[in-house]
Length: 355
Image 1 (cartoon, helix red, strand yellow):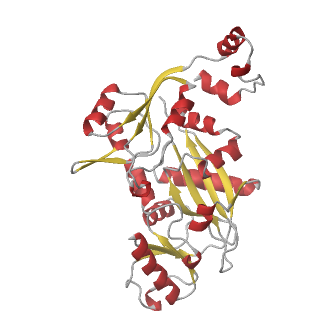
Image 2: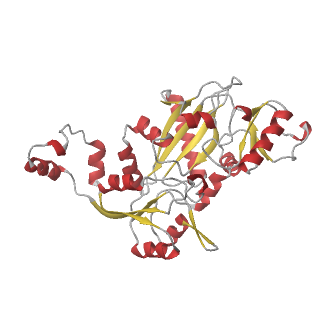
Image 3: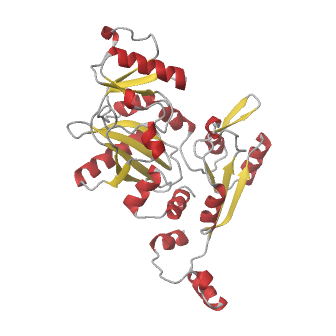
């Protein structure tokens, strides 16, 4: 891993190799670079669907050619493998690469559903991301909240509901105002100004809307008025050391005078992201994010979201154990906290998992 250490810490101010006047000068610079790792990496993809939003078996959409270019700077053997059939998957297992770099969750081969990470675990092949068991815990927000609560991590009181289940005020176990969102799914889909409700009429309408548009039950929880935070997590496979990278997400006031990270804000990219400079808050967020990551069984990397209570206690909102690998929140966690580039982030994800 000497090359990766050199790449992260190098501060060379040479002109680009392509504009050096002599081939001999280029070779001189290249000789200074540590040898590439001999470990093999396969970037695993599946055929693209015409509608990317319907491809539910893909948790992270990768630019496989870009990822290959980045990883090839540090590893001798990097290839892209498209899995179309179960035979393709079995052949990958027979090759036994040192790492599978993929955002695929599962395959449907006929009537059989095969989860990639469980399959790789069964063949003792390392991969980026978490196991199916951890992803299942994270996927259902009510299950995730139950697990972290049992681990002693603060989270807003909650219940789940569907149309007709809580028709009367006496049947609602929490006081208003309440915050309502789909029990499953990400990217703030289903969250808007109507997600904060102050009465039965608003609650009933929002639960009905989520059921109709998202085909989902609703998670109904006590509304927290504080700031939004997200904490990126890196896990080192060998040492099991966790690195926490908190950021603050600043959102504007919506039509109801509230500040929530809703779908339109994310789609329009109108939120602002800041490094957490308050040392006490930074320490609090780091501690509880690591605890939540471990409680959910997270591996490799992930993101844990929090909202601050009125008395400045970070409350767990949800987890994302397959965060996007474009230049979204996870990358910004890395950039603001570690000062690393996008390329270095991708290399670090691989480095942390190669055995």
